[in-house]
Image (cartoon, rainbow, N blue to C red; front, side, top):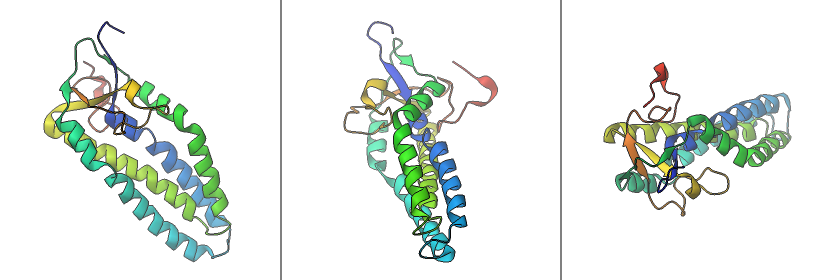
Length: 194
């Protein structure tokens, strides 16, 4: 790393990193859960799961929004010595740091099917959808400001996945074309790199 520079990870990429594993494992757990009659019956389980899906997605989307906005407004320009972390590295770090929690949540969702079929899996899928929606919302903030938001890697915590936590003192901003991820954290199309 260059002298005086910091390793920076994209905020939207870190938020979005958990969306796919939570979403897909939730779909699998819900699918398996539908096959189990459970204590409440399939119909009640699926209805409860649909409610949990919506509530969880909205809760994840709305959590810490004010903090994200405050950090985005106060973002400093990134230094030329700052090292921008690749999207794949940020995603890999999040998944490595959260793998046991995700597997435990998947096991709990599968186990809950014996009580309320499909509900646990739909809750897990709702968390994944909420993270994807939050990343898209951060992408809209980035497009409005015409800058990408980055957070210091050493402030992300042990699991490399808390971009608006207490340890985060502020964000850094770069031009909209920096890095290998588009606003919102998705892969940049067309291979545009700067």
